[in-house]
Image 1 (tube, rainbow, N blue to C red):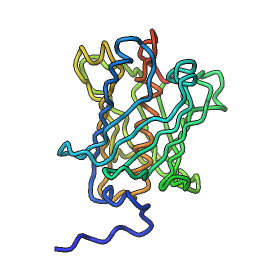
Image 2: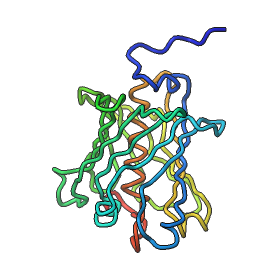
Image 3: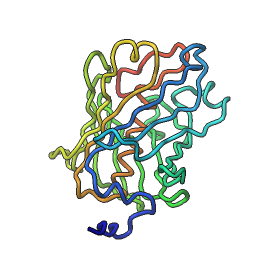
Image 4: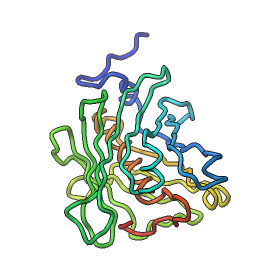
Length: 234
């Protein structure tokens, strides 16, 4: 039986996303980082629900930026398919991480293929809750992501709900999965699950993946002696 044709306007390399309604994101443990506290480029495996790797993500940030700016650092994240072809690029600019400056909030641009923006994730100011807006390539609002008031992983998963623009309907979620005491205490290697509607536009599924990485860096990335972030603001 022939494979179904890719959806219209699907970026090359992302055709597989049209067939699934969830992804797993597993950050790899870096031994040098564990032993020395020296921040290395993050690497992630992106898998389907069966645990099969479908993409691989690697951070491309210079040493000085990683170790001076910590989790607030700007970064480029390159997403490769199983043939080593770069199919997506995520660009996070340097932004202020204080709630005193709500005009300069966190954001990330999703490109697929590299150099062609397909969407954006922008932080929405809120005094208590982590909130984000998912936008298409024209910067039109499409969906919202809303997290809990206290972002602290203690023996349980943490859900960031994917909602309609009016925040009345929950249509998916990004879950920071509890990885066990040893992994949580001694590494910053995190596991995430992403759930979205099967019929969601492929580009927006890619934007959700970008939202997952932005959430990881904002709330769960630790460098040196930094503690895990526990609220809506870093």
